[in-house]
Image (tube, rainbow, N blue to C red; front, side, top):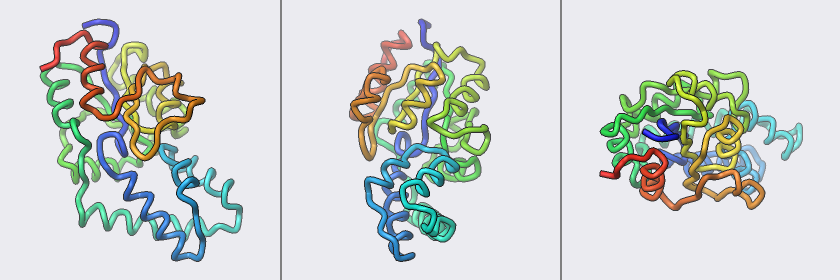
Length: 224
């Protein structure tokens, strides 16, 4: 195998269609508490670790914002919807994972989501057992856009960052992967990276199907 030999996946918005649900639940929770939070404010939090997103929200909304109440209400509604509606996987994901497994390419997950919830989401999406290495936001000192979660994932699969490709959906995730030294393919979910950070991406593609084609070239393996 060539210069790249492993792939590290983000979770929410990249593999599973959960960011949209989270956005809707947060907006509902804030409204129920008597606050109007703009969609733009919520989108700015996508990909951040829990600590980082809480602080960013307070910075934008001010110290009077009832963060604890809104967080609890939003999380309760979010979990209710995931457990009742199920979790959909993104187009092309299963085929990509099957191909990587057949090609014996090491894979890992690097997500801002807390570990217990990440495991539950993977199970709800039918992806449990697909990844031996799962590194989460509550397992590292700093969340994305800091590189910690990617560095830990790469260390656990015993690979050099320069030999790994990250798959991300958000600008925050792109920044984290780049800071950790990984090449990053971005498959935008709710919004693409801003022009300021676009150059950090190896490529920006519309779906995981196109990402697979790029990975085939980067890993110097045959598709199929």
